[in-house]
Image (cartoon, rainbow, N blue to C red; front, side, top):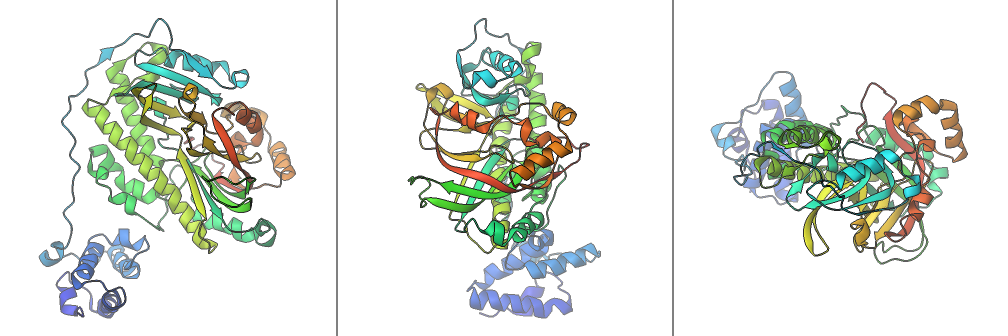
Length: 504
């Protein structure tokens, strides 16, 4: 059935000079895509309702949406009629279970800490050990572990793993960058591409990535994560949705990166399921952007108001999942996880398209998150702040630095580490110490020695500020098995801007 201009005009007062364009799209959708007329009219109505969304994503009506959005920017509004509004799906709001608000309560620490295992203790700073000792003295703590890349952070050290009672969650033990994660795409492209077409690889990073605290991007590939009903769950989530949409497909500052490199698979493994060989690979590291950061700050403050602890443990304040605040944070944290994953997929999809290749496989994992798991037969909540899930046959990625290799690993399910492994090499020195001791010349020299091309970056991310990744991996051979090695070649990071904070 052909759609007429009268049917389209019934949706909204479409300008006459766009009639032919609407009819062409309608004909293509009904004849070639075999869309029912009702579906096409519904798509038109949704586009007219929100032309910006459709203009900035790849879809069947992108070109039309761009024209409508351009008119809107000129002050020409095309408002839906009552008939047009009937096609707009009624937004479903997520209903939260009724929970009581938490009352402020004071807690003391245990007299004796819960025992915990330390991996690579000889190269872990005392500050991280002190923080972990405090964490395992919380009255809600069940078990703990410290990974070999550990260093001092806020509350729980980075590289710290803490299992608590299953209904208690600690925002600062999840981290400020909720659901920060790794993502690796592997391509059936030979290693000589770095000699044949280095400029193509560099250009794809420059044109398809955006870094920085305020970073946003207009061009979208897949925005389906923004359709989740969880975006309607609470006021803070609703208020952040537009910002999250604008930042979808971007990366933060600090140690966040997108880089090209080579993946070497030296032995056949059923989890990777690729032939032995060397492959072109794309590796990215970032999290949930401004959405996750704002959620973390908001609920960390609430936790510290509701759960009053001694000064040294103040940042380990928790929320009870049986309260309104705890339920809100749990929903927001899990949504941040879905969003962070979609963020990486967006970057990888754009870059894969730019080189006209589809990935053979993808590997990804969170490392700032909390999971409900079983530990020694008991339900617990496992916080991994800068730690990689390493349950039996979990696939994970442990990066090194911009000049050191990273590794794809298979988890061995060691209960002493609470099924966890390191999330990277870990810092040897703070950012302040790095700025005071590393010079531009020394950093350039080591990059040249390793044949690394760096786009952006600053001295606080220089290779020498990180621990030796090979020593870190050697300290956790009973936690993970190395399946493949990733060697960086072209690295993209945020441009130097010391006025910005750091999102890692």
